[in-house]
Image (tube, rainbow, N blue to C red):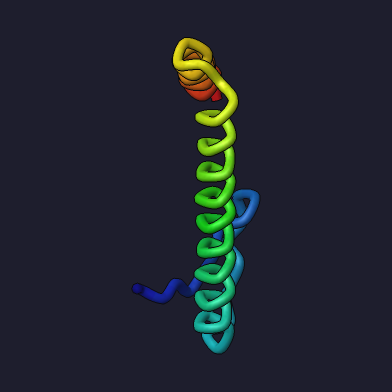
Length: 73
């Protein structure tokens, strides 16, 4: 991955200290990994509960409503 010498924040360029680039990458990768794991866990837990407690028609309706809501984001 290419190292950047500046970072744009609120329309202003800020100089990055190259000695912090690797540390930043490690922290960013850790946060991304944790977020992905959280999403995976939530989706699987919700999916199991929905399948156990909803009828097929209710699942289809929920999927349609979710897709509609997601398209508005």
